[in-house]
Length: 292
Image (tube, rainbow, N blue to C red; front, side, top):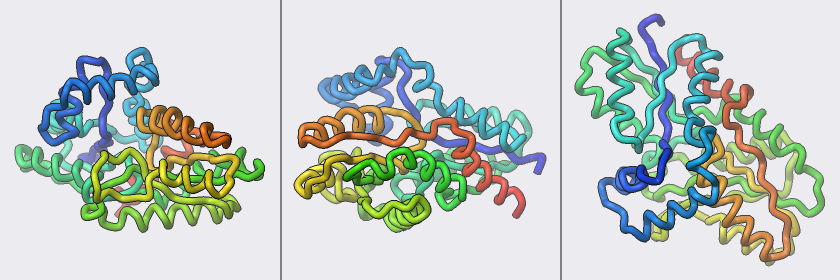
């Protein structure tokens, strides 16, 4: 389909400390964060060396080029919480003469609150481009390459004593999750079965301090597991696709602190980033759609 472009949609990440207020305001639906809220988030980004790491700042651009090489068709990237990002991408796509977009979100699991937010924003912007149509790949976790990547990633940790594997994904509001939880449970079962893992649990992370968000939380799962005598916890954040603050800080700092304070060993499976096997999962989902 020569008139089709792929739009890779991602959450976005701040590139300088000065970006934090606009970034957080977007995430909060227009509510401006307090100075304390900004300081807390800045401390987290400072801890993972965000401001010095071009790799962290440009991860999605790297994934875009890998995906484009696999597909051999144009791929554009746009961010939900970076000002004018989607607008700019659509302008370029239109100027290049494309009349159809296949949209795919970097999140492999669909939820109304999460992935649905990208669709709602893009649909509203496309009102200005009546000649461009769009279709969405809502989720792509069932692709064999997705499951294969995570089986390979956790293989080195299998058989290491009393190891408990904890699969995790971003929490979402329970009333807006759709089939999100069921898909995540099914994915965890498939990976565990393929990898031969029997000792595993599922938890959700990075929720705001409010009721009504999907659980159990990773913190409660850690505490429960420590009470049960677990001596090693291996985190598998398979709801995410790359190294970023919710993995490098929420997992590697906060979860590690809880695990080690309880006398256990903390491990985490490596994130895919631009791994070819993993990116093939997105590419395969797009190819299937192109061939329909």
